[in-house]
Amino acid sequence: MTGPRALCFLHSLWTGLLALSAFSALSMLSAPPAAAAAVAEAVRIKDIGRFDGWRDNMLVGYGLVTGLAGTGDSPRNRTTRQSIANMLNQFDVNVPSDQVLSRNAAAVMVTATLPGFARPGDKLDVAVTSIGDARSLLGGLLLMTPLKGADARVYVLAQGALSIGGYKYDLNGNVVQKNHPTVGTIPGGAQVERALGSEVLRDGELVFLLAEPDYTTASRIAVAINAGFSQGLATAVDAGRVKIVVPVDHQQRLVPFLTRVEGFMVEPDKRARVVVNERTGTVVAGGDVRIGRVTVTHGDLKVSITTDYLVSQPLLVSETGPGVRTAVVPQTRIDVNEERMQSVHLESSATVADLVLALGKIKASPRDMISILQGIKAAGALRAELIIQ
Image 1: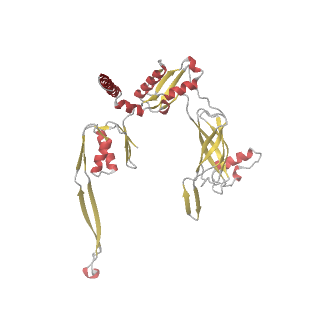
Image 2 (image 1 turned 135 degrees about the vertical axis):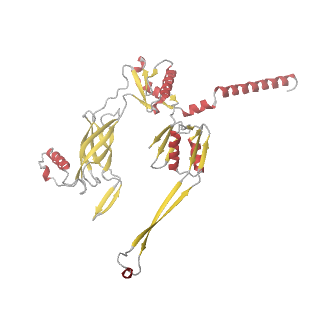
Image 3 (image 1 turned 90 degrees about the vertical axis):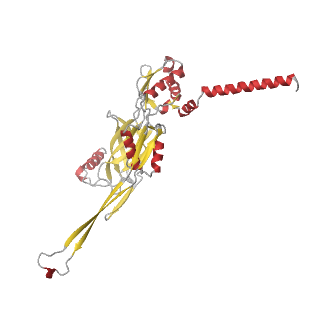
């Protein structure tokens, strides 16, 4: 291709490349890196809360564990003896409670958690704990125990062999123990007998509850739901609740509507926090926690006081006269060791990670770091909530 046709082809190619470059630059301006990072940190609505009316319920019951090899409650435990007598009475066996001397049974408390949408026949795990003086529940069997809710109604029946995960053996004052042998579990040992109603739709409305209340996050959830349905269905009531009006055509088909709502992506707003564990010397902080301009001076003063007691003994007591005796003379030494004070200066907008790195360079211990963080918080330079565990 030569002549005018070649020149026209090259001109067209150059024009296309310029247009492509301009479009790429415009795309980069319209979608800055911060927006891409925000999309990467977005989570589903279902991961940051739940709908009102859907909750777990605590259940508790009192029962007996039998089959223990002499490690159950002692005859001094009147509760266990009375429980055994009452149980036998249910099978037309009348035995006075004061005649029950077995150590193969133990009185226990049984607990379980009933999910909001559990139905009769569903299996639940239960936890069993001794309330008497039993030494171990190893090898025991829980007899049928009704578990009640806060309304004193029976919702679950529990029964089965215990899984302890530990042991305890003692003889002649020697004890060998692993874990806690007076606490056990029964996987799938409870069966739901009564369904617990969970009503999430009330008067055509849903209420979404945030796990961590925050006004900004609640507002973003409402905006995301309204954008997804192209109509004003959601309203942020307060920091912990978002009210959603369900259209009439979706009220009879609520599950698809909830599935769609839970799938919307939202970027939750995070509150700046620094968690300090004084027992282990652990400091955990978010990457966006900032520290204002501050100067930290760290030093260590050690004072050691040592006292030695020397005995003064006369050589010949009889020749020196009356009143002469052995004397104890204390000698005290005081040593002061003051290390050179070191300073750390942080500019504004520094992070907790920068502070920890700087303190590590001056060989500050984890507990010193905790004290320094507390001091920075008191000085008003730590722009975060300090949580001490």
